[in-house]
Length: 114
Image (cartoon, rainbow, N blue to C red):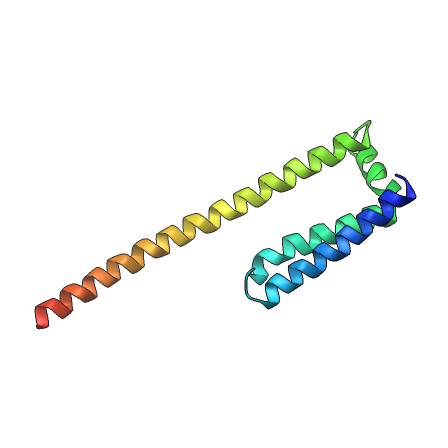
């Protein structure tokens, strides 16, 4: 990794970290989901500062090329994040169904009283 690439990656990581913090402070991003993005920006910053670190970890897992390890890691993180969001959506769908049923019961009770 060239010095210019390292500097650009470090700047990107810091700007991304600040942007996530800004989204959380404005209430546009839940604190629960911000941890994933904050951790990702820290990992990018570490990889920019210590470019050999990612290659060494990739070699430990048996990857010959660092790029293959980065792609594998990115795919794994996207799948994990998608699974987490699927669990949240399923839970929210169940809550919406329960709230809709409760609202229907309350509306029926109000109609019966009138």
